[in-house]
Length: 84
Image 1 (cartoon, rainbow, N blue to C red):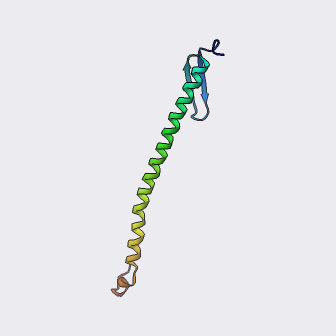
Image 2: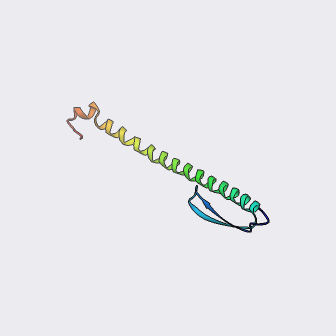
């Protein structure tokens, strides 16, 4: 196959694109493996950053619950204050 194939077009179902590889079949397989490893590492990094941002946002959203509980506490009720 290496002697016959010099230009390879590959339909990548995972990333939904058409890719061109110049060279023989072995070169195509090595290049494709390397590119897939890079894309997978980028995806994992993006997912880690997304998780960090979600955790950061969630850490501030818990504070609002605490403020609401304090506002509804009996101390405020004795003062005649109501919060809705």
